[in-house]
Length: 114
Length: 111
Image (cartoon, rainbow over all chains, first blue to last red; front, side, top):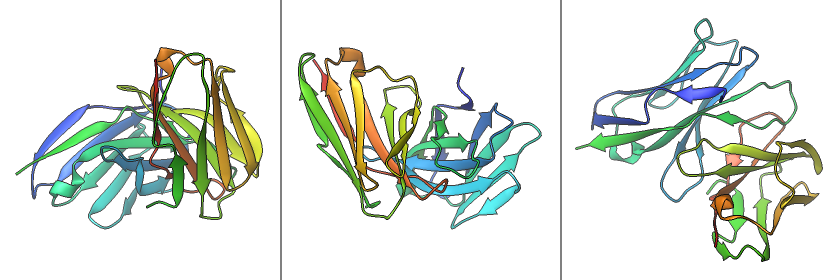
């Protein structure tokens, strides 16, 4: 099976509310995790990343949490806006310093309700 | 714009055709990647090139043939494809093991 997965294919939230998108991974050797956003007709766009030596990382309106004990990754989006509507993917990389391909989860479609 | 461009954006081809997808990055990155995105499936890594050398082939059928003439350009040559190869083909680039920047993709339909 896949190494990285998501719990929900679709998440519907009210505009202005906070969104939490979850992801589980199974490879304990993974040390780099990334969240991507993909809008219709576009390629994935980088949102935020985190390395395994961290538990939390914050960006502008987004926070990524990493729980290595249970191999869980989450993306929190504060004050969700209509422009946040997209499919969100988590991805992992075993790293090692060189260029490596990413392993992606299936994606969560975030729907913003007015 | 991410600095990664792909052409064509859409392609329809028959199973006996030969076509090529092109990717170009203007970011000074050393690594380039091909991914396949099929409906209802996660993005699948196909190939990795680092400093023009192929470092990973993720068990991709030989009807897909990559070419990387330099660190800025990446091609995917297609021949005798099957209808199940219809998908969005995404190119990405990165500086070493850093963040990967994706192009907009080529939507391929095989008839």
